[in-house]
Length: 119
Image 1 (cartoon, rainbow, N blue to C red):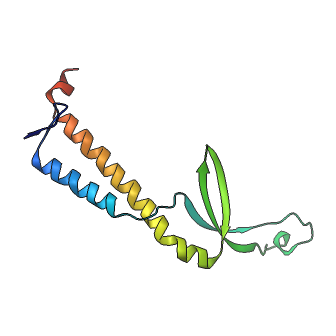
Image 2 (image 1 turned 120 degrees about the vertical axis):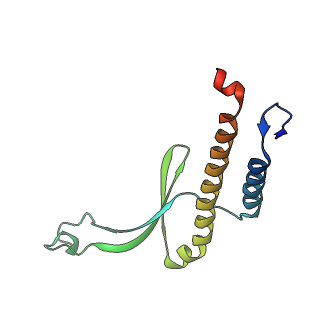
Image 3 (image 1 turned 90 degrees about the horizontal axis):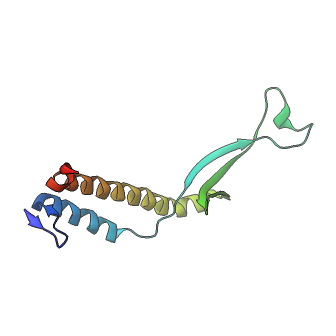
């Protein structure tokens, strides 16, 4: 067991796993949050083909959506933009995964702390 400065005991395996997570985090590049989907839509014109039976919807449109200060922000991307931004979106997904792993590891470490069990 290794004892940290705060008195929390962390074994070598947990410390090694934490170091691997931190290393992976340090190797990430830029990360673009949000999600991407391909949409087909109807317009507001009464006699448009999108209102026919069967409808011929407009699109496809590549849409990137994210939250900014609690509000949804949407942008339409070109196929070229999607290709360029895809690695950044993959980095964001990897970032979320690594942070989740670090949270889970921290909870495992705290579960083994005797002081945690007594309260």
